[in-house]
Amino acid sequence: MRLPEKFRDQLKIPLGKLLLDKETTKENILNHIPTGSYIISVGDATTEKLLNYDIVPSLQIVDAQEKRTKRETPSSIGIKTKLYCDNQAGEISEQSIEEIKRAFKAESPVRITVNGEEDLLVLPVCIHAPDDAIIMYGQPNEGLVILRINKEIRNKVHTILNSMN
Image (cartoon, rainbow, N blue to C red; front, side, top):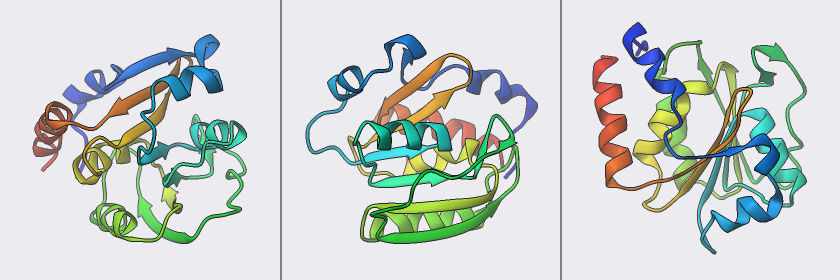
């Protein structure tokens, strides 16, 4: 599935609460995560930031890139399940969707390492994540987006995904 040009600008608007970089502290992040939540991180910098705060996401999706520049992946110490997929920039591959589904059934913490780009994988994660899961992803040059999965978010994401077929 390829993202149509008309949705590119729309996806630059955070799907959830944006914490500006200067507000992104461990305490502030924890204030937005209900106790016992299933936490999902999408992106290397986001995953690394959470791990540095001793917040271990149940699902971590990384691609060894930050702003399309190669980087080392965050530490995988403690990861119980490692999955891999190919996903090109501006697309959502069937393989990535299948690996996301597998991840939610696997022993956590789970790490999906993407060969390509993971940015758009926030969308299928929104569809397949458990109710009330918390997804965190970076908003380039702005901060951290914290998104709680609910029916409204799923409906919005379904609309975007349906346009990609």
